[in-house]
Amino acid sequence: MTSEEIYERHVAEMKTWIEKEHGVNSVRNIIFLYNLIQPALILSVPTGVYYINQVAGFYCHQMYAEGILVFPEDTKRDFQKIVSEYTRNKTSLTDENADYLDTLFKQSYYFNYLMVDRKRLKDSAESWVYVTVDKDDFEFEELCWGLESTSGVLTWQRSD
Image 1 (cartoon, helix red, strand yellow):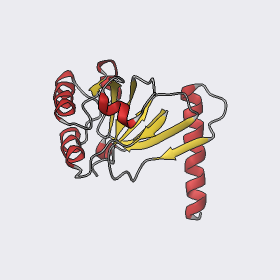
Image 2 (cartoon, one colour):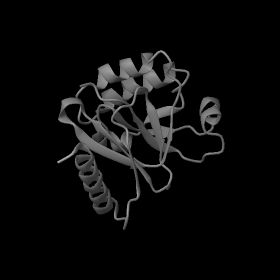
Image 3 (cartoon, one colour):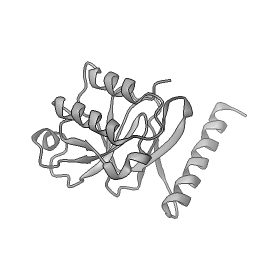
């Protein structure tokens, strides 16, 4: 089997998985985020575009979300380094983890409009944190002017 055939098979498997879980008839647009070099925010908006990332460290869980992908500034990769180390190999989050991440968000100029979505702690993991968005925050408006989304996923390259 060639690498192209392996890739096509992987895409077909991912489409089937999303269609079954999401109850949609045909998934046409999948973007794999396996090689992210900076944090990315998937804003929950019905677009028909699904983003998939491998998360939870060496557990290699596959997670997906539909929406719009934006890249908050993290030029020195300081934020990614801290959040990646803190969540390393976690397969879910606790309230204590969420408190710590919320503190990091508040201390970061480029992420201070985010808060961990407490209703999705069990669904969050290393490299995949469900968040709520303060859409009225100045920095968020600079990033996504006019967008009404108030939830999403913060994701980045997993640790291993």
